[in-house]
Image 1 (cartoon, helix red, strand yellow):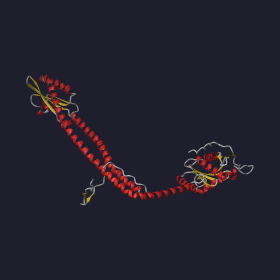
Image 2: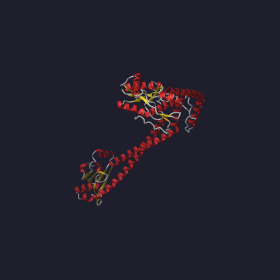
Image 3: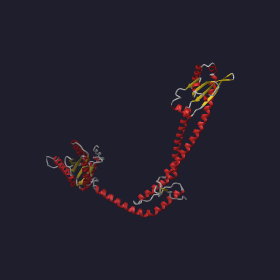
Image 4: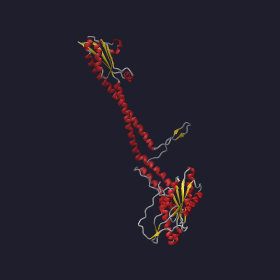
Length: 459
């Protein structure tokens, strides 16, 4: 079993012991893995850099000695005749493409290491080697080789070569690049190791902590507790099992309370839905429509917007009721409500005030011609055959009144009154001039297999 001990405290400035700043387990593991990885990379990089530098130094010394011997053999004749120009020409031609920054030829058997430049017989300096990084590298890493020029067993001169230190700079650059690459690879390895640690230890602990928080949130709501996640680690799985057992004692009573609460909530939702919809036609009830109209007024006043309000009254509805009965009248009202609802957009609202009176709220500003086209669209949409329960058919008609916000009013009462008056004006204008009454609705016994769907109001 894992022994849980408190984290050691550190003494503060005042002498009192204070706890360290809180951190996550995953952050601690990542920090430790990063430290180990970086220490390993830097250690290996330093060892490799030292080994590579030593190998490069030895290799450079050996190659430089071989080049010096070859150069001594090449300038032997020119030195014997003391032809300075020939010696310098040979130095330039032979060393131009070699990793040599400088060459000196001194007559006599004395070593060039203790001779000054004024005693040189001939000298060569590679262009650019005395400036910038070349000079700095040459001062930090002086690699020289010195061989004699001999003829007939006598030393004629001494040849000294200075190695080009740019190779050392290249080596250091490659080492730095290798260390950086190793750090990147170590970072990827740390991420992979951290991910594995997270999968096996840190994430299960975090999942268990999130599970406990979730249970604290859902338990007051009465939901059944979910089983705690398992990690595949004995100690963590035992902790999860103990947590599940603790919640089981509280879940039964809480589930009963939740069931009762859900029943009351669903009943309340059904009552609200029934209160907001007309029980016969399914469109908005009068109370709900008036509430939505008041909300639309507030929004229009706040955003300087506009909307259209249509007052719809069924023509000859009393004659249909008297001739065919209330069941036929209800059938006509349902058909009118459905067709009005299909004729407008989803964001618009259709409501029933009572009897054969409907209202339509169309959101947005429209010119007068468009508003009249919408009214005509509503009239056309409902003027289709309705099959009555007694086998007869009737083509209903409607009278539509229009009120525009804010031109016709700024309150619900003013707009409803304006739309109602406009509707009665249209109803009076449509009366038959011969009888003074509206023409009776047309009826027929012909059965229609399908009714064409009314066109919707364009968005």
